[in-house]
Image 1: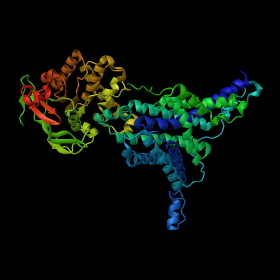
Image 2 (image 1 turned 60 degrees about the horizontal axis):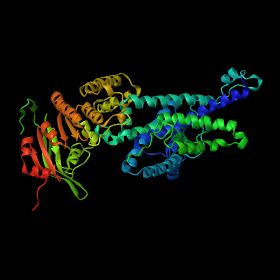
Image 3 (image 1 turned 90 degrees about the horizontal axis):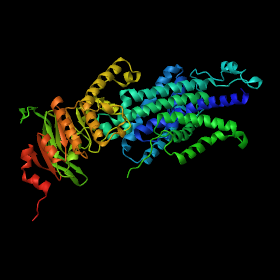
Image 4 (image 1 turned 90 degrees about the vertical axis):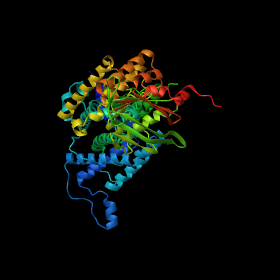
Length: 331
Length: 269
């Protein structure tokens, strides 16, 4: 095997793992969009907020410490304790569920039956509110997230594969964190699908996604399902936030990963969970391969725009995405 | 009126199950229902008939909690019902079908009918999420109940088919199956035979009678086909322009001059 071929495989592997993370963010969008028809612009900020909260709780940071200090003239910043990672993750999850409940109670309950564009605008407002809230609660400095995930390239895989392609090939470089993220995301996605398919609440979720009136008539409370769906989106946001945060630090640009989910959704379809996953993988592999093969000829940095161009091409030829429901208007 | 009695064909009709008292429903300035009172007795088949726009579907929506009347009281099982959301009404044991079929099109027939069992499934979200003993047992039990209904309505052949692919008549039957799966105290059918051919109508009539006979389910239905209504029902309410113009057995209603006028038209002079 030639070294070039093996490097190509390495690029594909890395692309797949990047794609899993895109898929994770896209999944949050799909969950909410399917059940309520709301395109949740705040999904990326939710990931940021979850990561901020997780770091804050782990470090024993006092929430709203700036305001408290300004009003009372105190100088508190830390409780002085450290919370173990697992407990902190659980507590963060509780915060995300509370957030889901509040969003439903104070915002979307009052917007039932409004135009999709109104709901979309509400989520934009929500995104900025949540960003400000994160800033206010935990401060705006860049934080490092240490939940005990392995970092750096895997020596083992590198050593195992170093001899494959002759002397020019130094072995596959694969980030350990990427591998963990892939496994976690795969488990999360599979359990979400199983939950939606086999559990009672999952069945109710699918029912609400399908027909509101019929769902009401069999005794499903729409509000409960919407809180549940926003909570699940919060869980997905937390996982995405942890993975991205561990990779590149918890900073406010984290919320921009949501923009990468848009082309994923256009590829996979807004209403399909498998679509989000396949779309994420295609974008992940596509942009890495494109950069590796063609990027060099046209000046590089193609990863910034490749996904969007691909999505644009898809919009022209298959507007409903790969797995989305076909839009048929009967007259 | 409290006493139960036995019909000529040998079924027992019990006391009052649902009592509508002076119901008035307005949409803006339009009065869809004008001060209507009637009752539904346990075990009977009660029909609501009337020309288009008479307010029949609105009445059914009031019973099932989709509309809330401005005036009047709804009494169910001898207790006054507060203003209730549709899903709470469903949990009280009132199931319904819709005029324009409201099924979960993307789901299989089996899943659709399982949704009808949701009010009977009690395990919480955490045991469902980890899918442990109780949740699993519950699923099996409810699945058995659903299979019985599938047998009863003779839809075994299509149990795995996505509902979106079924023809109209079968969709109507699946919707009936989903409502039945809830084992309702009161079953509301909004035009169960609309748009069906003669053969399908006969099938549906047979199923409605069988449901009433075998499970003793109280049924309130809206129907246009006068022949069908007169054959099926024990008592009939007749509505016209939001008012009640007749109430009684099919024979009584048939002889009512106002009802005849409403259906056949009357010369204005």
